Every structure is written in C-alpha cells, then in structure tokens.
Length: 478
Image (cartoon, rainbow, N blue to C red; front, side):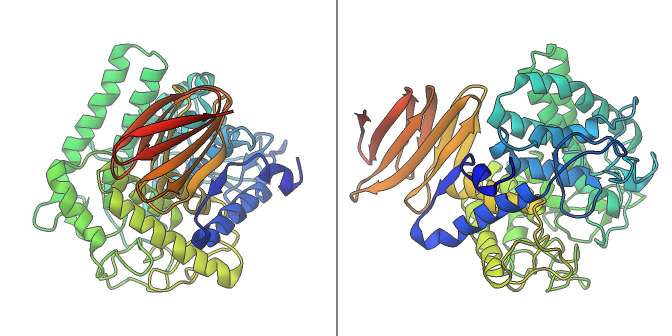
C-alpha cells in the first residue's frame, strides 16, 4: 500500500470541536509521517520485512520503538506495529540480553553486553500490553512472553544492586546529556516496577501458573518498598537518584515522575510529588514538562536536548501517570498545553519535532523535524486517550469513555479486535449529551460524564443514547 489516502481511510478519525481544528490537522500529519517512516529489513541487517522507524538514523532503538507502539497501536491492523518490536526479540541473546540499539547496516548491537550504555528503559511489557488492549491478539502475547520473561531475568541478574535498585547511564536511560552521575537510577528502578506490573498482567491473561503471576506482583511490591525506603526525600517531597553510598543525588529531572505510572507512590506522597510538577519555577512552564527542572543551573529555556527540552515520550509517561494516580484534571490540562504548543510550532514550521522548548512555542535546540518517531504519542495517543477520553479492552470488547471536555467529541473507525466502532458525543439541549454509536459486533460501553456514569451492552448496529442529568433514555436508530 503506497498511497497515503489509502492508509488514511482506514485509520481512526477523531471528531473535535471546530476550535480544535489545529489538533486534528496535527493528528493527520503525525500519521502521514509515521507511514512515510515505514522501513524494510535487509539480508545484511536481518530486521523484519517492515517496521516503524524511529526517524533518527538507520539504526533501531529500543525505547523509541516502545513509545512508537503507544500511538501506532491504533493502526495495529494496518501498520507493522508488532513486527517493530519483533526486531528486538529476534536479536535477543540466549541469556535474555537485548541491546538498546542495533545497527541498520548489519544488524549488530551498537554496544557491548555489560556496557552501562547498552540497556534502555525496559518498556517492552508495557508496550505489548498496550498493543493487546487494541488488538486482543492473545496468540501474540503467548509468542512474545518468553522474550519478555527472559529479558526481565537478565536485568535482575545484571543491572541492579544488592538492595534491589537498578543502575543505568545517561545514554542507557535515554536522556543523553542529563546532568546525572549516579549509582542508582530512580527512573530505571521505577521502570522495572512498571515492567513487573505488566508482566503480571500478561501472565494472568495467558493463564500462567498462579505462582508466576504472584512472583511478578511481589517483585512490583518489593521495588515499591525499596524506592520509597531509599529514594524518597520527606523534606523535599521528591524521589532522588542515589550515589555510590546510596545517598541522595539532588538533581531534579523528569526521572522521578516515572514512579507515578509505575504505581509505587503511596497516596500520602502523591500530592507532594505532583505539586513539584505544578510548580512554575520547576516544571509547570509555558510548555510543560521540561526534562530538567527550570531552577537548575544547567537548564536551557530553549531546550538544550535533555537539559530542559520538553520531550513527547516523557510527557506521555508523566501524563498517563497523573491520570492513573488520580490527577486527571492536571493530566488533561497538561495535554491541552502540550498539544497547543506543538500546534503553534507546526503552524510556523509545517511539522512536528523531536523535542520542544519549554519556555516558548518553538522547536527545541537542537531538535529534528518530521520526527514520527515517538513524537506521535502527543497528537495521536494523547488526543485519543486524554482529549477524546477513550480507554479500551479488545479482549473483553469494552470501551470506557470519559466525557469531561468540549463537545462534540468522538472517534470513528476504531478497530478493537475484530470489531469496528464509531463513537460521537454532542450536546443535547442544556441538560444532557447525545451519544451516537455504531459497531459491527456487540460491545460494552461505559460512559463517564461530570454528572453520572452510564453502562450499556451495545448491540451490533447504529444507536443513539441521550444521557441527561436525571436519567438516560435511548432510541435505537435503524
């Protein structure tokens, strides 16, 4: 398939208010760039036949690809989404090791095994579970499970200290020039807790033995205890990296906020941690969230790569963590500001960028343009999940729809397993919302509004439901 129009006709189609036309334009531009960045393996590199490229170089990158999955999964039926992850599994060593980067010229690892720079954030299980939520492909989960379990075992055996916390490097953690020179990394430790959480979910979905599921749950709980024991600073309300003596390394980057999505922050600490994100002197800049606190001497207001730039993947992780931890209003507000600044830059430059300046509507310096690549997580994934408000579960044919913003809003042509679903909500007078639904197969729809929650087992066909403050009436449309 070579025509962009042919791809576009099969992609999910957002419905947004007229004043958000710019977001819609950016959504389609991001998809177009993703399609343009489909690459093909060669006999020399041994990569899969087709895969989604990171838009950085001819090499493939581990955490870039995992974040690409977070938006590309909405086209799982159309683009080489799963195969992009398979590139890494088929390069996996027998002992479980996977390098963070492989050369496009010959498929060789970019770094030697044992190098601190060789391991990227371990996000494969998170990415696979996210893909499963759209595809419902349990056969794929079963096929990749051994790769995920072996990789986790390698990391536990080679990348953590005796207290159980993990180490990385500037290149390894993905934040290349971040001013961190530490022995225990809060992001890597939280990411391994995240990994354990999703390994438990995958094991349960696959019907693995109960002791396997329990072991991953216990690993998550163990890492949560150790992160809170060693890395939490009660006086500052933040989690720190640690030096070689396991003492705090008080350089404030975006790294501690991985603890939110990893679900390791106790409720009594979450508000204090999130208040750091809300602080205009540190992270709540014109374009949130910079990857280095604005009060650090090395902070660059124009970006400085990982010394202040706003990066779409870390914004995605932080925003999803906020939503998960119960800070939904801030998650939506941050998403709106992020998309608005991205859109302002696109108006000036015609494209989306690798990273952005935190204190102005401009690309970061330095930054690459046409970067989809992982930049698609903003205009595609955050638009669908935070602005339109959809959470999906293909295996159980369920959609949870949060209506907490402007109307009209919706998504047409959503592929949920073997189902095709369209959802559009519009204002109905002054007291309610009209929800139009079309589907090929029945599914369970849960709608959450500011005034009530509604649950419906939607039959195949076209339907219209009117949700009011007092009750709910529905009219079946032929």
